[in-house]
Image (cartoon, rainbow, N blue to C red; front, side, top):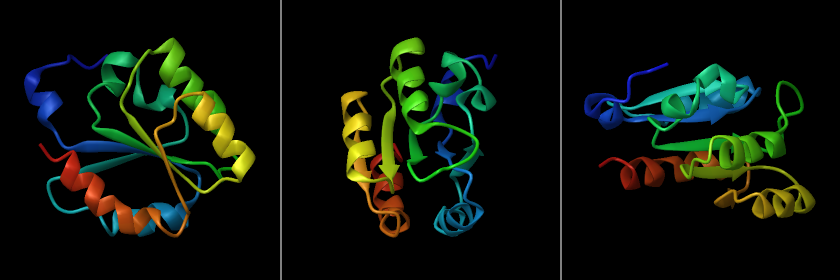
Length: 127
């Protein structure tokens, strides 16, 4: 378990949950120096609630077909961990997006739009 220090909280990091190496590479190309993108396929890879809390936001791939279920990820994050970090979803069909909304995901973007939006997220959460 990470010790939740002020220095650790000030680190500029975000989570990308995906099994798509192409989108991972595309997003990694948009991450400026001073930021860290941590890629995982399961919240357990990140750690427990105090570890997850140290990240500024999460990008969640709704088209992931292997490795994890996006609905279970958001349920786990919001109910078991009771964390309210921002979750920006990309991809997915309208039915899945509706289910994610019901489980308190924050925003939704098209798959080809997420790389363009990443810069604004980094600026917004760059405090």
